[in-house]
Image (tube, rainbow, N blue to C red; front, side):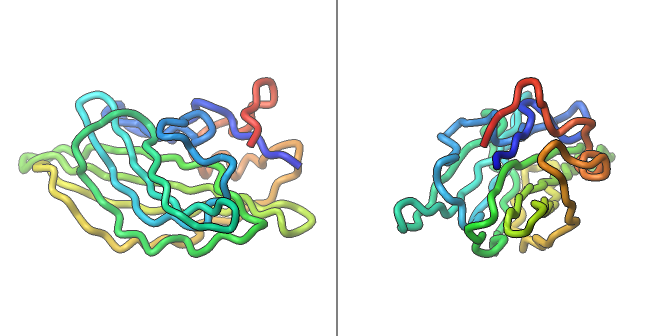
Amino acid sequence: MSFTVAANIRLAGSAQGNFLDDLTSQNVGQWPKTQAIRKITNVVVYTGDIIDSVRITYDVENGGVISPVTVQHGGNGGIPSLTFAVGGIGLLTADEKLVAVYGSRLVDASPYGNRNIVHLSFVVVNTAGTVPTVQVYTASGVYGAASEKFELAWPLTAASSYTFQPDGMPDAFLQALGFSNALDKANPAVL
């Protein structure tokens, strides 16, 4: 059984900065598709005038050996603005696969300077049961006008759990992620 996630889909956000297309279409830094991701260990948000990026360090398993791999997603923003101190989502089992990361950066302007609010969502598919389930893990952080760096404990918990049949995802799942169609059956990116 294969799962497809459409390319070029982003979370809804402000014009100041949507970033992080799904990982199937953002291979900057060699997204380790063929390796088993076991843990997310570090996330740093980089911001720029035009394009934001996120550099994520994963623990991946290759031939029984687990090693860190850092991947840059979403663009070339060059100022490290927010670091998530990650405890990780725990070791992913052999039945689980990280299939996509989505994010948005919203700017909240005030007389004292802008406040940037970052939201990230990690989509994990679990194929252990007779019907696959999709788990969405979320994390949020805020940084201020002077590019302050916040070290945040990551409250990474399962926000929601959804089931889907092989022919598509339910509307509730799509709406929860903020877009209208997560499966592009005409031109899928097969994982």
